[in-house]
Length: 210
Length: 333
Image 1 (cartoon, rainbow over the protein chains, first blue to last red):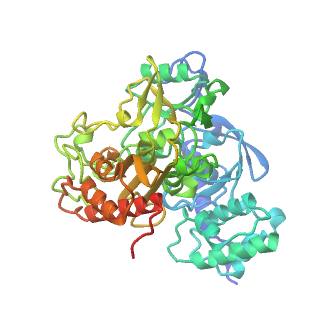
Image 2 (image 1 turned 45 degrees about the horizontal axis):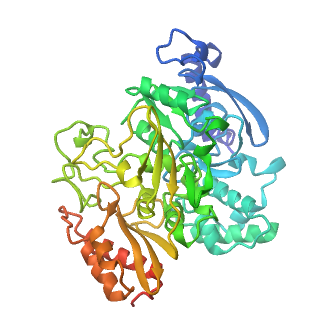
Image 3 (image 1 turned 180 degrees about the vertical axis):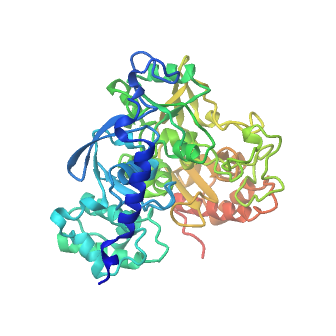
């Protein structure tokens, strides 16, 4: 193979992006959280808890691992996952809750991470597509997706997987029908039209894991 | 989104006071689906979001879902997914369960709340365009008049021609719900009084004042043999706003229908109660011919714009379908 094999598209962008970011604002040099900043006109009144507008600490569980990050209130969970934590498996597509590509599980429920503020998940358990393959081995659902050719371009796939994972978790041991899967993925748009194969994959995975 | 402060008061009193004191520059946030959308689109840039989800246990009413006396209470923070899955709704309140389960997408329903659904802003594309100043944003004219108005009002329009965006509103109006509002002067009102017509005030869709918070909806004790139903027509089966909705409630005793409520959604700037259709149905035995007459009466006053006359037969057909289903009369071929 040529030298290019060692360069990935993501790696290249990541290198450029980090350099650019560091020049602008190193995380350690960001202003402290304004929770107790008396100089800020928009700051909190006496007594009630308030965060921001600058970065404030956020602690939650990501794929079973405790994480603490400094993130501003106006940052979505999607942006925090991808740009701060570098979990880029969750995809940005419409950024308005219309397509489902950014779906993650929050305390087991499929949610649009683009319409969720990062600080909404304080103390919660978040599962992204990276959390499905325990120990580097693809999950039963992921293997079924491959077997049934349940993806083409792949943009919807991580969100599709999370909606289906949510379904499998909340119906564990129950017999699933085609309509259960269709209802579960009603918020996930696939422009390639892989829906029938997704349904087949989920039914297969449900049978296999039951 | 512009930077903002995220306030997390523990009590409703604190939240309401904070909202009142900073009403020009703050927004109350529950599920936040519509609010975040408006902020991303540049329609609003509040300096402070006041979170209702972080209210303490003292405000358990806002999360309640279950019996209240002989009726049902639904806290403002109850999600659409919780509503759709609630097993306490019988035939009497089926319309609400059906409406909640049909709105948006499963993922959005896991976040969106009753309160937010009722108080969301219109989906009109002129209103949603950050660069356009329509009547609702202080302009002089509703841009749907003489513009692209396929999705706009055919009933009760003018001077604004939005359609009310809330799916729950249609069902809750049919079920004679009351809404409880906490603020400087706590009040409970019939849900129909929550909604503001454009003739009353074209800039707003609800009657809440700064510092007022919608706490819960209450469904009254159902009448004997009460049943209800809801349906919507959309261009897409999932994740689309309805072209038209119909919600019906009635009691069927000794072969006649009583306490009939007929409400159409997405045809008017408020959930559109059709007293004309109710008058046709009240006290009569259900039949295919009667339902057709009621549907005709419901749309008799419609004044379509250039692109939305299709909504008239659509709403008529939908209403007939829901009436057939609720009354148990087989659908005609």
